[in-house]
Length: 185
Image 1: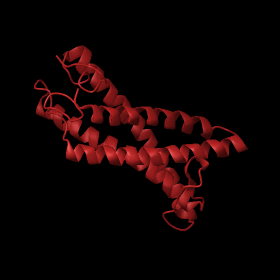
Image 2: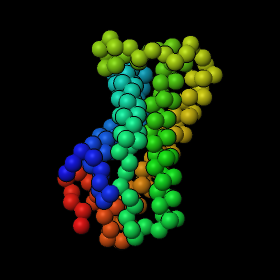
Image 3: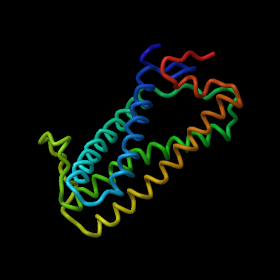
Image 4: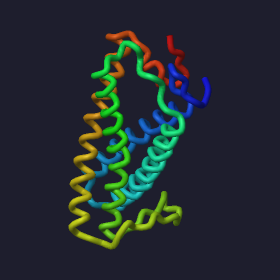
């Protein structure tokens, strides 16, 4: 398998970006849900700091992924996919990318609005605040973060179910061509 996409399948770099994004998002969501329910404690602050650092990694990965997608466009849609399905898939991907980028951006906005810069994994490498402390921006970014997170969960479910539908019901290569180390028929 080559690093670049072909007309029939995704290349190794596109697959890497896809699956590292999946792993990061699953960890971020589980961590976000878990830490939100914790009582105020040093552990909660440590988890929030870790969550913020991972969020910046997610933002970096999605920006690299979008840049790579511009350089190396995805394969052509499977021939059995009609125009309506292709249009739905295109918009679903646009919304997925927007949510994947929007979540860490809204988190960065929360950190900035609260006046606490992000210290990447407590390394002393500080991500600068986007602006000065602001209670109104803090409230708005918290709401945005929650809405985008819930929307992303829904989009991931639809995206996953669509891939499984293509694989098990339609018997096409839609899922197989994104799986690591898989060969398309």
